[in-house]
Each structure stands twice: as structure tokens, then as C-alpha cells.
Length: 417
Image (cartoon, rainbow, N blue to C red):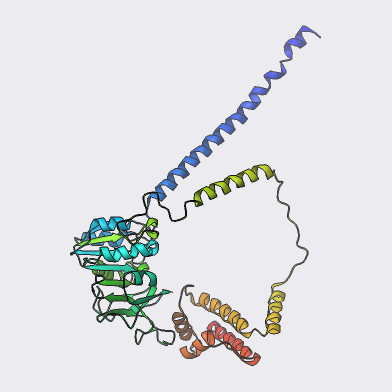
């Protein structure tokens, strides 16, 4: 080997660093970007967690919050005070000149309900939004509550509880029916039309009302039950008479204590002298160790059994079953089992979905709204539409065939220009 050859052949190890530097630089850049992205995500989550997310939260700026209502009340001179536990409510000592509103009673347990009744006995008024029957019984009210969940126009036809005779609401979350033992002076507003109503108007309150006022008694203060809570949110407060109702129902006293129950109120005892303690939780004390042990076991199992898998490989199906064959097979099963009720239900549900989509109605539209809309679009009387879509199940094959023909006729009428 010559001296020139030795000088012109550079060492092999000098070639590797130039090739490694770009790769290392890319890796470091990727790590920095991922770390920065992680910090941004953590910051966004922390900011989102600080915002109240409960329905009708007076400090909630989202669609389901009630910040708009609270700010309007403050602009009218009402002192709005927000409390988030039954203990804080008792400490606020609501008395004369104070209205107490429970915006979201989801976490209002039996014990906290009893303490709420006792704490507000001297207040001007208690307003309970979307309360259930158990909570009404804890407050000593002879009223039953039922879920509503419908988009319907209701007229007040009363002048109590902050409602005016001509006020209207466009949403129904709960409907209330006073019991026969309800005290004299119990007043219902915004009567809900029953299933037999053909024009969407309620002739009486036998099917319930969206608002009930219960007069003061020795056990409780004057109580207003509101079943259209979603109408008071930031998203819906500007619709119909929702804003006026909110201001009149909540702003009749110079002071408003807005109570948003916390999770600790689910297990709060009925005696205000005892408390669950600052470390109390909704679940038993052994739940956290069990969850931690299960998580550790799951991670250990993943480490011991985990292995790197290859890319996904598509595999052709052995048999392709056409949709019509599946439908015919289900029909034969219904026929063999003589399950006409189930077959009729499937036919009606399918027709309702198609008619609702064609008319542009929301999925939450109630039977009354659907029947009225379909009748107006097809020209079929509402009584006949209601019997077709919500009538009794067929008793024989002939009746089932007739029902199928009637449903088809409804769809055909809607398709005609």
C-alpha cells in the first residue's frame, strides 16, 4: 500500500457523524413539537375545566349556561349570589327579601332537599327548575313530576308566579300534576296538551302543566316549579317569552340566591348539624383502591402480553348478504312467530323517520307536533293520521296489511307535488 493511498482513504468512522446529525436534529425537533403540543393541550384542558359546565349555571357562558339571565337580573338591580353547596346556602341565611332558585337539581340528594326546604322557609320564594317527584316530596309538595322532552308551544293563561296570561314557552322538560291533596291556591300555568288533543291546545290540566305555583305553608315557603328550564339557557332565553318569564320569576326580590348543588349534596345528610366532611365522596371509600389496583393490573397485563402487530390486512367476506334478503328474513320470522305487534311497530317507526326527515322536523318532536305537521302536509285529518301512526296494534294479518297500505299511502301523499 502506498503512502498516497493511505492519505486519500479517510477513516470510516469520520463518515458516520455527518449522516447522524440530520436524523438526530429531526428527532429532537419532533420531541420539542410534541412536548409543546402537549403543554398547549394541558393548558386548554385546564382553562376548559375552570368554566362551569352545569346546566343553567349563572356563571356558565356556554349554550347551556344561564349567564345571560344572571346578567340581566343584575342590570335590573337584583343582587345575584351564587352558592354551590347546601352548606353555603344555609350560611347565606335566605330570609325576607330573598328568592332562592335551584337551577340544576341533578345533584340534589334527599338530605340536601330537606335542608333546602328548612333553609328557605323564611325566604320570599323558592324556584325549583326541572325538579323530580322525589325532590318535590322532600320539599313537602303534593305534586308529581313527569319527563317532558318536547318542542311545543304552550300559553300561560295565568297571572301568577311571574307569568302573564299571554306568555308563551317553546320547550317542555318536565310536566307537573298537582295531587288531590294539594293545598288550596295551587295554580298551574302553561297547560300541556294530552295525547288525545287534535289541535295541539290543552283544554284542561289533566295532562299536567309546565309551571306550578304552590302557596306558602308552615312546612315550606311559596314555591314555583318550572318545567321549561332549557328555555332559560343562553341558547334559548331570547325565544318566545322565556326572557320575560326568567326576569319576573327570579327578580321579584331584591336578593337572589342561585343554588347550584354540587356532587357532595348527593350524600349530604338531612341534619344540618352533621356533614359528610371535606373528604367525603359520592362512592364508597374502597372504590379508589380497587380502581387503582385494577389499573395497575391492566398495565402489567399490557406489558407482559403486548407485542408489536403488523399492518392491517383486509380479508374478503365469505358471503355477501343483500339488504333485501335480510329484510325478507326478518319478515318471515315475524310471520312465523305471529308477532304482528312488533311488525307494526317496525313499520310505523320506519314511516315516522322518513316523514320526519321529509318534513324537516327534529327528532325530539312529540306525537302532537308530528301528527299536526303530517296532516297539514298530506290533507289527511289529524284523527286519521293519529290512528295510523299511534293506533292500536293489528290483531290479524288483514289488519296488518291494511296498516302497511295506509302507511304507504301517507308517504305517497307527501311525495306528490
